Image (cartoon, rainbow, N blue to C red; front, side, top):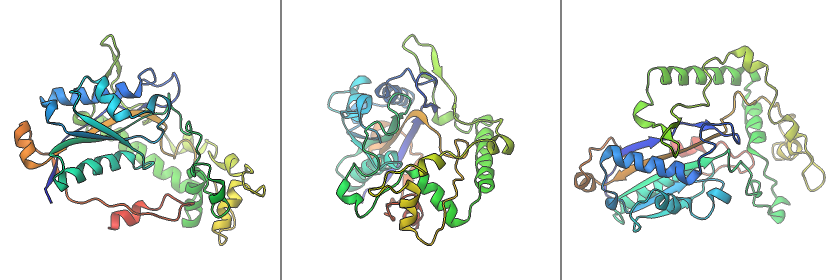
Length: 316
């Protein structure tokens, strides 16, 4: 197997993923990718003809993120027409899977250099825009297994593992504090660029999601994000989503809804790319490697609780 090296990694700032409110909300997701690609190519003085393929992870592949956003972004960026692109969906792991797909091609010797990455404009293509829920509306499968939204699953995990609201709020505060420190110390400076408007002015040059003024008191004042959702009757026999989840885990008496907008992952807009290649490809491109990809793994888990698979994947 050929060694696979990372030669560069670049992302946009993360904009608020609310229609008309975030710094990237006025940018088509193809254009977010296009700017990321061209900024990376410019700073690395990359010969674009050396890039053989690009894989982009995108969860909600409809409307402006439909068709094949990887290929369309290359066209929008005015890259050589023979540079190919394909789009993948592995839900929250889509961008990582896109990187792994290109790395696997390089490692197998099918290509010498390529790009993996991801894009999502949640302000323009909100979560759930494909109207497929989590199971693709498969009514037959629901007779055996009714998969619930991931917010319910997250609360179920917290309940089963004994994490209280105070626990998750404290963890969220620590996360915000680490993000604030990283931003203050410019840890992201080499991997992030300022997105521009069409007139050349700066649209966004910083992450909008972190909130440096977060406190335990402000977190504690937020309401549970998924409690009302859990009480919705959506089962075939009128069961609520909480009841459907507990049916799968009867040893758990009640789901404690501990997650809020303040301690959950953010709704954001953004794009990112990773440039990869073999050692020989890097020499040809005049680039120095920043890292080597040594391994990759995936793992499945019980589909209703769904969010526990990263642990066994990392153990592989």
